[in-house]
Length: 344
Ligand code: HPA
Ligand code: ZN
Image (cartoon, rainbow, N blue to C red; front, side):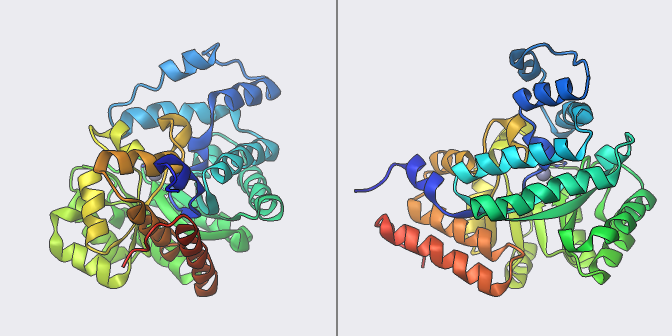
């Protein structure tokens, strides 16, 4: 019997590659952490918190996102945040997660780097032990802070080298182009980190920034990046290099007017390694399985298309080739068990 779209999408083994741990802070956990740390919040109920989720673009989202982090203080808080995400992710079919964290959003307000990373790392190890989920951390620099602060953060991170698989770049892209961080990313590459950068949707100079991350920075992956469809020669280059694109349909519909399904599907049909992810699921109300369903409904995708997205999620991951192959085989077995044709 053919499963429903949601059943199939939620059960599909998948990797999540674009997920900000700080963006998984659900209002109920925010209240619990505030109480534990003796913080008095301006909002008094979940409804009041949700009423502040009034986003029209990336900037208005970030204006709500950063202040909420004040409740995160101790290693235990960071652990509890990541663990709550991993449980939700497991319920939506995630078997591997490469999770972003923003140390400067915490060190800039006096919380030690050590609290952040030891808490997150403990949740990642626990996910492997108790849930069978492989989980890795990606350190993101905040692009609206200076390159010097990013470099100092990278130096701090070297003490925890084995706990961090790669580095990324997030926050406000406006007036903060990739080239500002060229030296930081060159050093990170020399230290053996994988590289990714956000190329947010419909930014001024989007296509120039995408070209710079490919040609100048030499990233392994691009976060969002769907404006690349404006330049077919860059799409061809991305395909040739096997670059992964971590798109986030529901997030796109909050920070712009649409999911950008036309662009995402165009990349899929062109054979680019495009993936589906949740970005900041507590704020956009959709975890990764929900994103698969939303895009499939909007773009009338087949279940075979969803299988391709899941395969792409492992192929664009930073797992070893043997781990990638094992996960891809799991996806293929899942499709076969549900009578769904494999992508050709
Ligand atoms: N873009 C930039 N910064 C962010 C994002 C994003 O999608 N999510 C959290 N911080
Ligand atoms: Zn993001």
